[in-house]
Length: 233
Image (cartoon, rainbow, N blue to C red; front, side, top):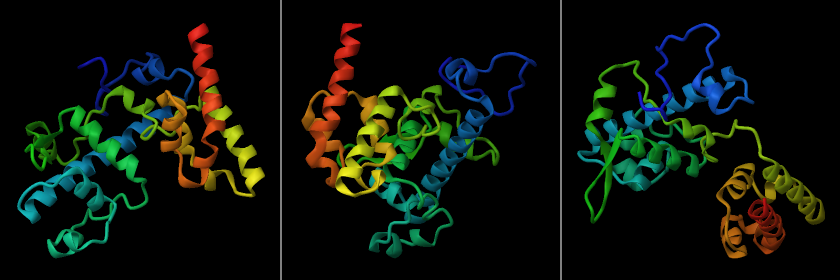
């Protein structure tokens, strides 16, 4: 097994032996991480099943935007006219953020369960490995260990000191503007800001939602100081 992969759920463990989860995130409770991994793996299988169902119903594969729209239950003429809105997995991820669904699909592409076909209008379809996995009703995809550090897919990971500082700034700004903190900037956006290391205020402004864009300089100042601290260390 590749060192960057999680073991399958069926792999036996020696009692008392440190698991890959504990070595990757020793500060977190392994049972919580195991639950998160299982959840992501099950969600990943639903994506593969959706790819298969769409191809069978529509006649060929679709691009990432259509696949995301299908999983999120997008109400469109395309979905209705092609019978996709009637499929069982239509809207399976309606409660999820678009970025979360996109990142999960990209992880499946990175790990080889989904492949890109075509160049003019690329579509996503099952690879041989993905199709083989679906032949086994209870088999789950093996995701890379780094999936837990993904700012979109691993929200259960502990917040970094920089992220906590950004939350403080958000709270102060919310009080000043008489808005709740999450009305200004979601937790997910703060996590992405803290982990993506933007290089300029303009990049920060692009990542912030409309309500917080006029105040991008405040967030950038915190990020810039952290960047300078790391460079001097």
